[in-house]
Image (cartoon, rainbow, N blue to C red; front, side, top):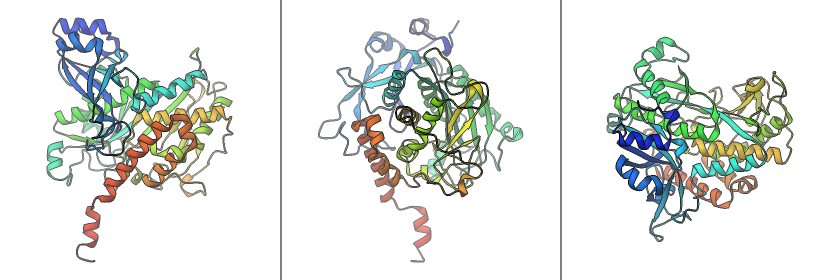
Length: 454
């Protein structure tokens, strides 16, 4: 009998390959943009060569832009240094079936130099470094990501051929919470829910959202490293299942002039015994630990926004009255705030609402943990909660352009203490590459506005 993702071990994978039930192993690592990259390995070659030694891949994977162009300016690699190899080091605790492809299993990897030393700028390593810092304080984070996307009945190839114009959204109106609206796309949603379960995720629910074709699938909380591992598998699977169905999805933060797509991150802490440390009882009273942790998240909101919103398009999502936050601050069950406190008792937690669907979950989560550590180590006082409509209050704004967010991250002493100069400089350069690409582009808006009238 075939084993499921939730109980697959390396020995079981070997048995599955020997029995012919698995013939392909995906070797995957997450790149700077939060995408899984890697190789499709035959089962036999995996057993003979890759299982004990990993495999190699070009180091440009950690020094390329969204379109996989090689760009200058990274310390890691360049044409002058020859674009050498990195090692994909499998983490066999991540083994899972990929049910939308036959006889296929994935293992997620850390990236390392050829001498075995870890690549500190790879997103999974950035997160693991912050997890280790938090563990030294005696805490372990758990949580989940809520990831929205837009579904189109237009396939990827046709969308590209039409320059992404005139796409047919999967819904014709706002289907937020609409059972009829989601019933119209249940064929896709059913596959997505069930096949994610088969891939080792714990699917909770699916619902419609505000924008045309916009949907959200929720997954049960777990430790934050596993949450981020699952997150990137989900993004890949959502795209590939859509492609198989002749459809397409986008995780752009702002695909059109309607509501954007978010990636809300929920998080709480437990101690070494597994006891929740955010509540003081069964109600909503926050412990000192929670107050200091959340205070750190609020205090670093401006400096760390770049890690929550890494692309030019990310900032188009921040608009008043859009459910995307624009102000620095926190509130009790208040969706107009950047940080929302929700739940009670063991479920008391905070929700970071700034990240869009385009965020790299590892980097955004690492930023939250680094922010919380800053609050704990400095015993920061939690400011007063924002009550009412945060959009209309006289409070500091989060950065509203990528240029401003990158500058804030680059100059942040908190960021450099938490992540180190190597990580800050690497991702600052990535931000500059994104800005330069956009600044050089002539947009449709400019042509329509100025072609005849200027």
